[in-house]
Image 1 (cartoon, rainbow, N blue to C red):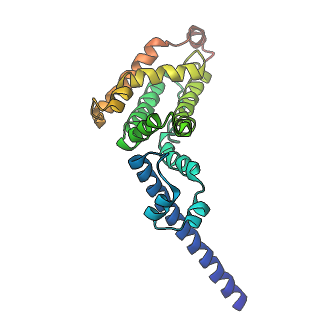
Image 2: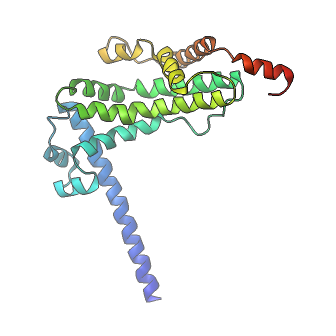
Image 3: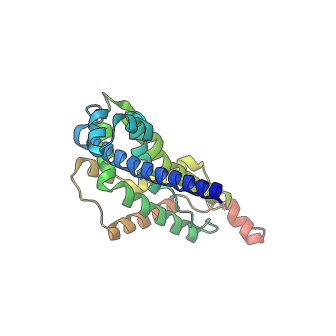
Length: 229
C-alpha cells in the first residue's frame, strides 16, 4: 500500500508539473507575441521576453526554445484555426460542394481578417529585409495550413467527379475569388474588417462564382444519364 501511495503521489506531482509547464509556456508565447508586435521581431530580445513572462531565461529555453522557435509556436497557435473542420461533409454533389466552399471560405475570411493575424502579416512585411524567417514561418505554417485544407476539399470534389483540374490550381482560383483585393486593403488599413454577414456573403459569392467557372465535367454528366454514376 505504501508503494501504491508513493506511486500515486509521484503521478500527481508529474501532472502538476506538466500543468504548470503548460501555463508557463502560454505566458511565454503571449509575452513573445506581444513584444514582436510592439518592437518588431529583430529588435525583441530573449531577456525582454523572459522579463515580461516572469520566467528565467533558462525556463524560457526549456519551455519553448530560441526566438525563432517562439515565432513558429506563436504562428502555429493561430494556424490551427485555419484547418478545415472535421465536420465538413465530403462533397458528393455540386450543392454540397457549394456549401462546403462557402462554409470554409467564411471561416478563412473570419480568421485571417482578425486584427491579430493582420498584425502578423504586417510584421512579416516590415521584417522582410532583416528577418526573412518571419515571412517564411508565416507562409509555411500559417498560409500553407489554409492552402492544404482547400486542396483537400478540391481533391475530394475531383474524386467525386464534381470538378476537373489540378486541386492546387483550383484552390488558388477559389482563394483569389474569395479575397479579391480585401487582404491588401486590410493590410493598408483602408477598409474595416468585414462583419459576419459580409463575410458569409463574400464566401457564398466566391463559391458560386467558382462553380460557374468550373461546370460539372461532361464525362460525369454522360455517366449520370446512363445510370453508371
